[in-house]
Structure formats: C-alpha cells, structure tokens
Amino acid sequence: MIKDYNQTLPGLEQDIISKIHGIQRRRVFMRQAGYGILSLGSFVGIMASGIYVKDILLTSGSYEYLSLLFSDAEILSYWKELSLSLAESLPIFGLAVLCSVGALFLWSAMRTMQLQLFRRALI
Image 1 (cartoon, rainbow, N blue to C red):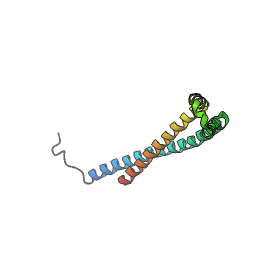
Image 2 (image 1 turned 30 degrees about the vertical axis):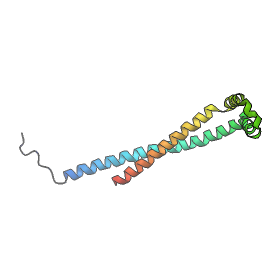
Image 3 (image 1 turned 180 degrees about the horizontal axis):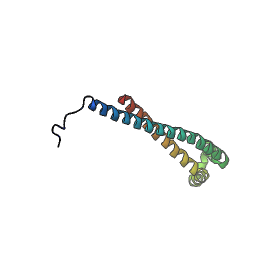
Image 4 (image 1 turned 90 degrees about the vertical axis):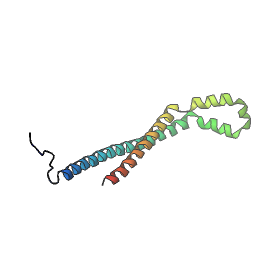
C-alpha cells in the first residue's frame, strides 16, 4: 500500500467545499422555484374558488336568511329552523375548497420566504 496517503493536494479542500456549496445553492433554488410555482397556482385557485363561492352564495339564498336574521328579532325564537336552513343553503364544498387552497397558499408562501432567507445565508 501507499504510505502517507493522508497528504492532500493543494486546494482540494476548497474545491470540495465550493462544489458542495454550489449543489446546496442549486437545491435551494429548485425548491424555491417549486414553492413559488405552487404559491402562484394556489393564488389563482383562491381567486377561482372565491368567485365560485360568491356566485353560489348569491344563487343559494343564504343572503336572504342572513338578512332575515338581522332584520327581525322575533326570528330568534325559531333559531333551530333558521340555522338548519342556513346550513343547508351554504356551499360547503366551495367553502372547503376555498379554505384548503388558502391554507396551501399560506404554507407555500411561508416555505418560499424561508428558503429565500436560507439562500441569502448561503451566498
């Protein structure tokens, strides 16, 4: 075997560190691009589902139940029937999609900002 194998070439350590640093920067950039695209897509989803929920709320009659609740105090004696009618007229699916896309947007935007801070620390 070769003796004194532990001798290093000049600049080898710096070359290895710079290569690892470049790989880390590229990985952070790819993740940040992915989360950025996900943020944009979920923002478009928020807009589309918001328009859908608004249209369904206008056609379902939920506004009439809410205006009846705030205009007539005697309706509170029939609160069970009113709450069931209101729950039946709400677009549950649209609201669920709106909330889930909103949560996805917040999560992906937060991850994008965290990776931006990490990327600045790498440079």
